[in-house]
Amino acid sequence: MLSRSIRMGLLVLATLVLCGCNAQDGLQRASVDGTVTVDGVPVEMGSITFIPTDGTIGPATGGKIVDGKYQIHASDGPVPGQHLVQIMGRRGTGKFKQEKLEGEIVNTEIIEEMVPKKYRGKSELKHKVQAGTNTLNFDLTTDD
Image (tube, rainbow, N blue to C red; front, side, top):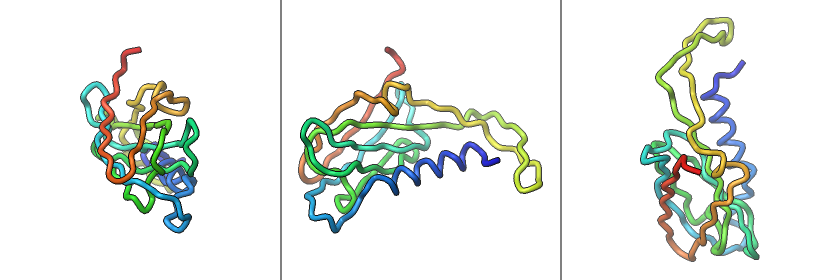
């Protein structure tokens, strides 16, 4: 059984692979960077995905969040226009459990989801990406 941190890493990798990012597609793209926090606490590890909406044409694009920061270069970035923004993020709890991994018992940290559901898979968070360089900071809250 894979540990939660390995599964999270695979999820982030799959998101990036499935994004359809391609510098050779002839689309104008923008670079995007910024920070992601939840109630003022940086998201330790996760992913951010920009999904074109409201008439914006282009592929979904995304990147990794590490220690509350993300950066997507223009070669792989979103096209300018309106986007739904989905954010996934986890953090270590400081608690550990024993798991069997390749025949050995190892202590693995218990990981928990820290981004509220309203910003994840069915996110209604929208943002307009401008041509050129964008710094988009997302200060999320757990309040409804």
